[in-house]
Length: 55
Image 1 (cartoon, one colour):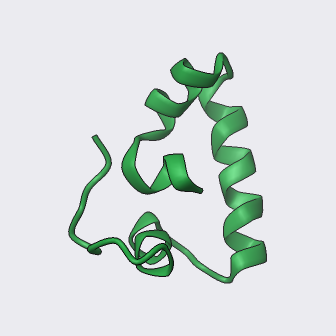
Image 2 (cartoon, rainbow, N blue to C red):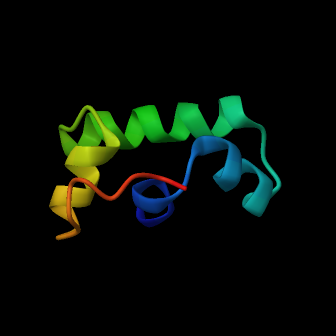
């Protein structure tokens, strides 16, 4: 979730050596467990400004 708050799925996939679909699947599961629906909500949970967009 820390990576998702600041990076796109493509960037995360490249950094971790995974496929974008794999990253998105893991993010969807984490979103469900945390009760959030967007990266903006993740940033809020982490205490980051909601306007900080993924690079």
